[in-house]
Length: 147
Image 1 (cartoon, rainbow, N blue to C red):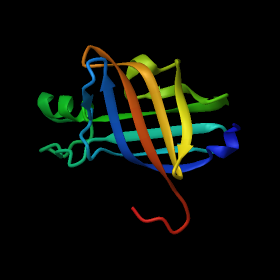
Image 2: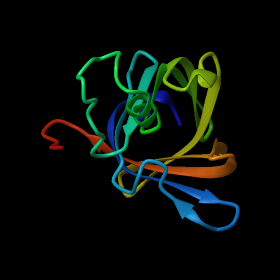
Image 3: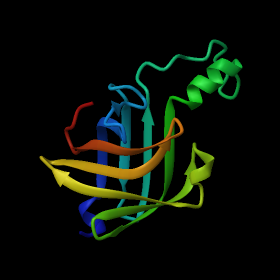
Image 4: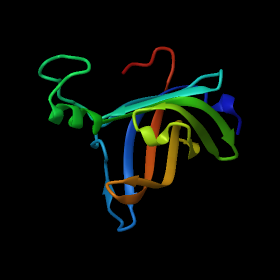
């Protein structure tokens, strides 16, 4: 499949993690919100956050109590960079990330389209000191789409 088949903006419908124990979890809640975009110029971005995040009491963009900062950091993930398609994988070459460990890395995601939605998955994602399989379902947005 070619890069142009991915081009567009998608809204997150679900992100679930499947553990080796058979348990399913939702790292940012069953109602997590997010967007991913694949641009025709070969760049991409993704933002995912927990729904109903608490505002910082002081309203300072770079301030906040330690507990507020920790909660904010643990309830949002974002990154951007270049992307390319290799067979049934999309490879994200990360340039900027809210998770510093991903900067200058390649993040590979299996992808497929099913029932009109984009499914992205990855095995071996480390969350909560466990290796999990992450499965994300994205709905394409187009002209006239409503959020």
